[in-house]
Length: 277
Image (cartoon, rainbow, N blue to C red; front, side, top):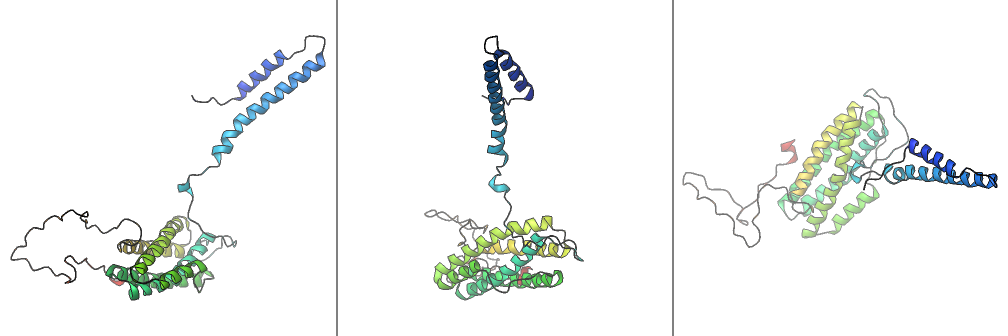
């Protein structure tokens, strides 16, 4: 049943009714007035509670999806620059781009050295290429806009590098892909927020380029099959125990396909970052 919210008219009518019921009829007028007063006060309190309880329960609630990505306010307010207003969100974004390069480029080098699959090594190559460019752009923006930038990874980021450095073999592949992919997933929302809200043309250019680079990194990390998310490679995989669909026989005029001798179906190599840039 749908509850009916009390209105001012309803409340006024209730007060008039209570006043008639509690009007003294001789003998003890003071006692009658006191009882009537308390009844009216009680009715008003009940009405107030009925009006305020739904607001306190539901008015301040926000769905989880409505919470925006986390960013830090440096307390410096909005600053005027030749490229437009520079907000605390803008400055935090430029710093985060710089921080990303300080740990993801070393992570990419580890992937190239220790990755056990070509996909992991290619992901490392993309990280190095992408963050070399974003590093340069963030340093330029920091210099022009007067933003102080970090020169070493955060304690959390250094901890991620230490985890990767301690891993070997397929354990390294898994740690690398999952840690870096999770970090990119978090920053992706911040990139979109800055791109949408910034009024600074230099920060907007950085966010536009970062959006492309971060999405590229997410894709190559997922293509390793180790990132803990569904594989994005469009090639279908045959379920275990199910024979693969037979391939149509090759025409004698078709050139013989080139295959890795160690694998009957060698995966296509991802292009390097510089090739797709």
